[in-house]
Length: 338
Length: 213
Image (cartoon, rainbow over all chains, first blue to last red; front, side):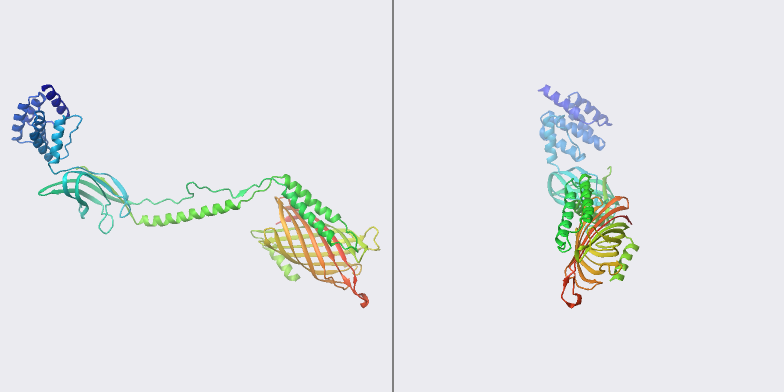
């Protein structure tokens, strides 16, 4: 049994933060605790509590009592001692890996028996004020079911962030805007969380700074993601078309000439048609062998036109968006040290 | 008609603009001319010039040729004559490969009575197609309306068809070859004894160079 007590005490000693005790009695109590002299610890810690101590020293004295009662299996007394600890230092947290299970469960029971708002955290955030889903993440823990009101108190007034009957971990998102929808004025605020359970109340606070800036405008676009302009000309494949067309046109002229010839005048000279038709056929043959000229690709031209229209429409939307953004403010919230 | 055509051609040439093209150049002309009967036939050659202009869908073309026509082998004619022929068209594109056109034809003979001088209005259509970079073939068919002959008579059915080739040779230089065949079913009534056929038939080839502006 004494081996277990010794091991638990060692764990507690490791878990206790290094608060340098100025009070001599408290130092002796700590020394007695380190030496596993629990009765001596109880005597010295109580004696120290009757003396003039600072807040951290008082919390330390009660903590020594809590750990010692826990080691001595006096759980109810350990819980009472830990209640005093968390009332003095609500943020006090024990590491379950470094303290004895008895002490930790006693500390946990103590937390549930006292109304506290702990671990109030306000994260840094930056968003467009007065609209959208942007907001400041605020989270805290309420140790008992209580009516809780979260406010932001500044020089310009008080803004209720949220309220409700909450217990345990609470996550809020504050849009940092006034009732009318405008962003809260820039300045220093204090986020205050008040919890009330019957006659018991508790408050936690965190100072923050709200600053205003210009909202970034959007750049205009020259292309759309996934879409690119296509070449507006294309080189058709080589074909017999040039010589075919020359043959068709020359043939048409020949047939027309033969058809129009007057029988009474005899067959006309074909020298003239031969010269021009021959030139057309030779030209067609040469053109058939040549690389064809680029021609407009109508489908691509149409596609590019549609793409340009889309880009122009998008830029119009961006211009409208930028006009609106120039009238907005960028709200930046940052927590300040307490 | 002629002043209007001249004004249009002048406007097209004088004010080149985007989408406008003007070509102008000399031509060598070969011709075969027959009249009245198979025995009266002439062959010859000469020189001429051509002008072509386009602006948008509208185009205009004019050609003039001066021909020395001599009796062909076996012809009953004893002497040749000199002919001056003027052709002009104004065309409007109604499709990518087709246009409708109107124009005039005028041919005069010197000496005046060695052959028929004729004037007519052209109404017709043409088809044109690019067979390669800078190469275009053209086929045209015209009805020759209201022909007037120096020797009188009428020609209710008069047709003209043509084949053309325009090739860009180098830079602004173009080569042109144009074939025309005219058939006029002329009828005369000499002395009031009744109409007799006096057809006229002409084949013409113009080959030349042109500068594009």
